[in-house]
Amino acid sequence: MNNTLYPAPLYTFLSLCQREALPKEVLDCGAGGANPPLNLFCAYGYRAAGVEIDPQRAQLAREAARQHGFTVDIREADMRRLPFADQSFSFVYSYNSVFHLSKADIAAAIAEMRRVLRPGGLFYVNFLSVDDGGFGEGQPLEKGEFLQEEDRGLVLHSYFEDDEGDCYFDGMQTLIKEKRARRQLHSDGQVYRMAFLDYMLRV
Amino acid sequence: MNNTLYPAPLYTFLSLCQREALPKEVLDCGAGGANPPLNLFCAYGYRAAGVEIDPQRAQLAREAARQHGFTVDIREADMRRLPFADQSFSFVYSYNSVFHLSKADIAAAIAEMRRVLRPGGLFYVNFLSVDDGGFGEGQPLEKGEFLQEEDRGLVLHSYFEDDEGDCYFDGMQTLIKEKRARRQLHSDGQVYRMAFLDYMLRV
Image 1 (cartoon, each protein chain N blue to C red):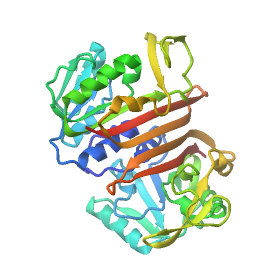
Image 2 (image 1 turned 30 degrees about the vertical axis):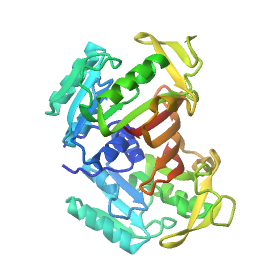
Image 3 (image 1 turned 90 degrees about the vertical axis):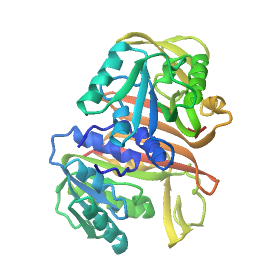
Image 4 (image 1 turned 120 degrees about the vertical axis):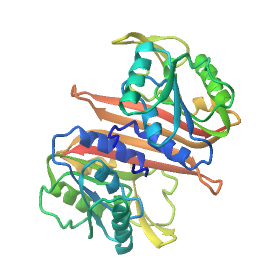
């Protein structure tokens, strides 16, 4: 058995997808890394594709899929210009990814994700909340956007008010909108405050 | 493969348990129903036990385990008096259950769960938040407690302020405390407001 575990909201999204009669075809936007959630969908019989802008992370995801015996189509591409035809997927998700874009670029990326979704398809995306402990840190850019120091250099983080993200989803049906505000003890002994806004919608 | 899906927070708790070096022995308090989360733990190699006060729901859980080829020890018992010796389990959880008790009884139940946990063991429990849509409905009893009409008759629901539940966990280490506030579209076309407070702790 595949004993890997994935971020909890993806199980919620998968359980919504499982109730649909659409073809089991899913796209992950921000699909890289050593434990790609596409493997979870593969384990449930989905044809899985992904885009990842970082070649190294794309390669890690391909290797992780291969180790589990899964075939995934992971392309090095920008989620603001998805290399897929209109209405190619029943399900599209982007977990902990779009908030590394500016809010203007998030609008462009979400428009692209909507373009490649079939009518009636399901979409999951999450944002950082302004209640996250990182809000306000680093160099401010546009409203709620900060350039923050990470191991890999300066990284953009966009933070959202509770209903600010709603504007991206005009004409879509909101199935679930959830705010998750967490205090978590890390191995360094510090307590981190994390807060996310999750949307699960129907096109 | 076992294709069943479970409530998302249980995957988070399982992923914490998986990092521990303790024996894989887990107890579910409120373990009944047709899709018991104990099966998730069984699939990951845990020895699983549960208590359930409703004989019919206990039987459903036993049958669901058998269908998956799992052996579980589900007892018809009251979580305020657990039929297990001190320090019998590495992991104890109670999902969407204790809030059907009064707050005084919740204290008794949590004291029992702590009693059966090994030193260093992990504990997960969740509460209804006062931000849940059901808060204030029905017949008020003690503070935040309401007797509410359900299909199965009058059912007690206890609701908690954000930090009100902290008092139950004196001397335990909080690993994760999360508030999940959700708006969810149901099949009847209504949008329901749900809010929970999840605690994951070390004894």
